[in-house]
Length: 93
Image (cartoon, rainbow, N blue to C red; front, side):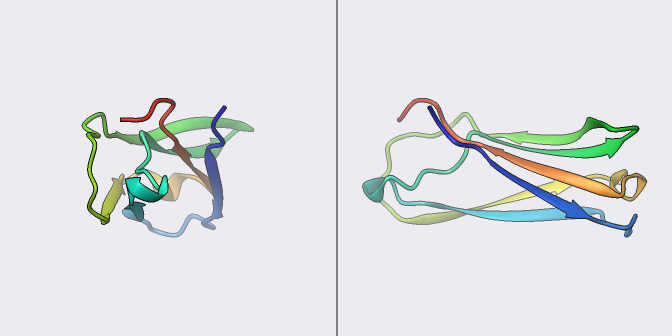
């Protein structure tokens, strides 16, 4: 079982266009980039998917690296609360 990371952001309808998240990759120490990162907005008490990025290209790698994810949307300002969900891999490379 994996534990996904969830972060909620109160935006007060701030004019956001991009949310950038950096993730580490150090497979020798069991630090692996996520499978998917999704952004949701809360509207009428329901979470609506705004945008999503997915990385299915993970291969075995012994180098330490940082991956930058940019979640871009012109719709972030339509929501008072955003939820960013980072989905971990369920299988190792």
